[in-house]
Image 1 (spheres, helix red, strand yellow):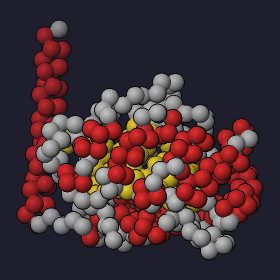
Image 2 (spheres, helix red, strand yellow):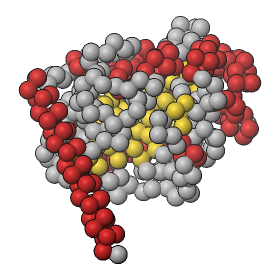
Image 3 (cartoon, helix red, strand yellow):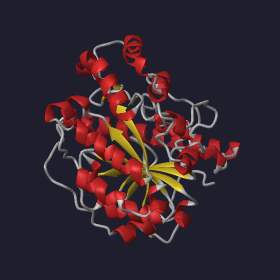
Length: 370
């Protein structure tokens, strides 16, 4: 049975979409454009840059664009090559591009068993465009072909009057309820919940979906992580176009996958130095095990559902893989190595402070001369 070695979160710099959801962070930051980004590296180059030998084993690679991931014509060949390399691939999609799913359904079964779709159920937009049937037909397409999937909805305030309607639709098409994530406001320094409701009320409203994904996310949202975190080693953030590899969100750059692809990647854990106000994507990172001391459900438990007919959203191989933890395939750092990370962090902070002081003194000197 395969166990996860690393979690690679790949960003695809396509910032356009065929939907316009009010809660989308691209919409919030007014970053939508109509240009599809063509990847400047071939699928073969990307496969080599992310080979199992280079990464140390079998990885879970998440593919997500700023807009709709599958709009880019370059993505399917890349996904296929990464599956051929032996990795497990997760794809975030709004589930509306029927032709893409028909193409994927024709792939070899051994590849589809390692493929997982995170279908974002944008109910109000799908209803407005009369695409709900199309959305679920595309879910059925990949399910029947042998891939795994999950269906999750973003719990926005505008959707509250439609909750009963959403639940009825889910039972009709899926035989179970969809999962629930958390709508976040990326415009705020604290990365707050995008809602006028306080957290306790928000939990009560959306808890009726009985979603392990939502339930776990609400336990870690707004909690600053102070434990030693292995993001930057056991997990990595990657811009698939530029090749930039960073420790995590808002963290330092470590390497570039397209530079010296025959060499191992430079890695280094965040440690105790997480710059985020809270681990808003901890439903993946923490569940997969980047902080070994924290108890968390498995990623499979968060993503799977058992339907009325007894079928499951996760196929057996994917379910087993998502049930593994990163600390089962990686060694924790020694006390000495952890101490070195702390010292480097303190030296870096002193250096930044020194630079700022000198800049202030320089400006004072200029002001006095004027």
